[in-house]
Amino acid sequence: MKITNPATGALLKEIPCDDEGSLAVKFKKAQRAQKAWALLPLSQRQKAIRNFRELLVSQKERLSQLLTSEVGKPITQARGELGGTLGRLDYFLDNVEQVLRPQEVFRDGKMVEQISQEPLGVIANISVWNYPYFVGTNVFIPALLTGNAVLYKPSEFAALTGLAIAELLHEAGVPPEVFVPIMGDGKVGAQLLELPVKGVFFTGSRATGAKIAQLASRRFIKMQLELGGKDPVYVSEDVDVAAVAASTADGAFYNTGQGCCSVERLYVHEKIYTQFVDEFLKTVRGLKSGDPTQDDVYIGPLTRAPQIEVLEKQVADAIEQGAKLLCGGKRQGSSGQYFEPTVLTHVHHRMEVMREESFGPIIGIQKVSGDSEAIALMNDTTYGLTAGVYTRNEDRARSILEAVNAGSAYWNCCDRVSPRLPWTGRGDSGIGSTLSVLGMQAFVQPKAWHLRSP
Ligand code: NAD
Image 1 (cartoon, protein in one colour):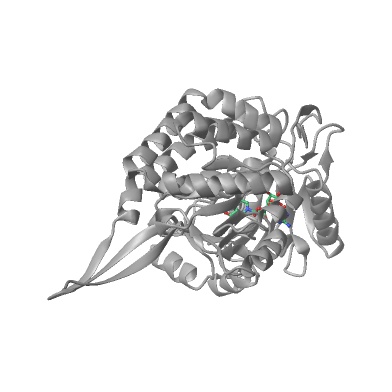
Image 2 (image 1 turned 90 degrees about the horizontal axis):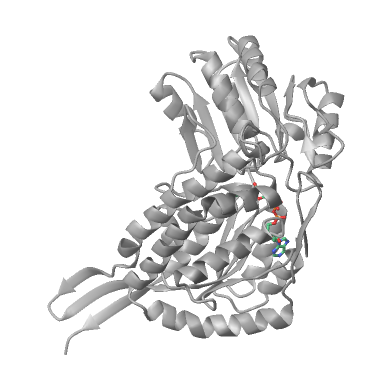
């Protein structure tokens, strides 16, 4: 597998891929090793993850540079992802004990009823490239802490980061047979699911999610799918327009727009629409594109080259149907996988840019007459990951967000994830939750104990 730098096209490394033979061997070893791992006292598994945390801290700069080189993430954002991962690890370390704690739910005379929690066994974690530390650790850290073995397939676009994570976990004390990197593209991912794993935890596109669901359903294994989004934000008329324009532009263009919870659709109240668009454009024109290794660069290259064509098609379709292109709209420069930050107005819901996930530096802004039109448009989607509202009035925000079908609701913020809250999609955005205690419970299965003393 050839790993290239999306900013320059340079070959970074060539690495060997797994195949059916190597997968079978790795699985057998993991099956044996998982049992011993699960039998260790929790404190020992916690110690290994604490060591991993220390290694992330001490090697933060090297790991950030590596992430930037293969994914094209601007370096300050790569450092931000590494830093943010630490808080998630702390949350998992602090809360795993309560997830595993057995519960007595009934006692009467000689009869006792208890619930205990057991790991699933060997699970598959098929992951993505846009936030490899965030979406990776959301799965494999609670999985490991609760006693599972993980066959971890990083995306082929973040393979070197995946290998670095594996090396650090092994150095930290997680046995190599318990956290096992699986290298390759989608074909290898599909082969991985031919193994009798006890669960599949997937982050990626809706299209691949549908294939994974078919493969997983044959053996009734635990399945979680964290898929795409077409995340809307509504800006009401009572806000500080410049501040909200800056906040939502950041939500739309951070990580070069390649976030599952990036703002993908903006609905703006007609009373402030013109002023908002002016302020938004001002912010976007100030975002610096270029070499992602530079500290002042905010927009990097797209990680996957084919996405440029997806964006070009969305722009062409929108313009053909009457949209106004205020900035950007095309590939940038002659080298690297760059696309200009793009703002479209006069958009509507027959345009792809308002219906299909863009996953790039592009946004459509639509004028609305008020809350009920905004709610109807926000719900006019097959996705349901996040939705946001900007207004000074909390009651108004709550009642709008209650009416919107999305897993996360943002008031005066956007593009935000918290380890304390479940990360969960509805509809085409997926099934199940990661993060929070709920998300950690995904990696254990209950056993119901009916105990009668003689
Ligand atoms: P993708 O679906 O193409 O790839 C994701 C992973 O699946 C990769 O590891 C890939 O090798 C593997 N894969 C591909 N085909 C497979 C198959 N047939 N069987 C098994 N594995 C297979 O995803 P992408 O386009 O590279 O990533 C972007 C998508 O991920 C976007 O839709 C984005 O919204 C989504 N995403 C969602 C979340 C979330 O938390 N909901 C987070 C990050 C990204």
